[in-house]
Image 1: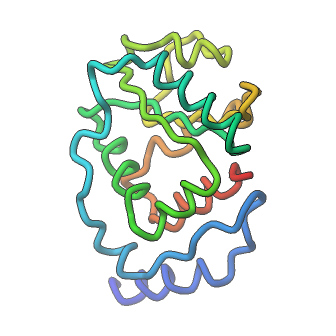
Image 2: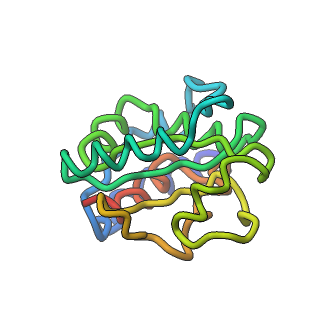
Length: 169
């Protein structure tokens, strides 16, 4: 069974069309089956989230990129998996080329909630990681789709790359 799964993982990325936005990086199969652990605590728990997000928007206005806000917590397995996928050497150049990135610790859904509120999300987050993508002027690009990566542990790195690729500018 494992041989069939590996074959499917190798074939699917080759036949998928390019993402809506930028072409997501094509990740080697080894990355998809053996994800190294790079980030164990991707969220700085005592950071000034408002200042960090404001700084990302300031950088985006200068660079012409979109802002990617990763909302999560260090207790969350899916958040750590997503952080590790985004830290892959194959992903870093793609993300750096298209996004000004910032990670925001939302605790256990009780901290830094002013950040999602900036985008009209005032109810409890449905899950984490929650990824908000916005234009440099603050326009919310992916409303209704922020929790698509909240099951990152069950996604291949290529699927994560393709999802992020649709929001790249």
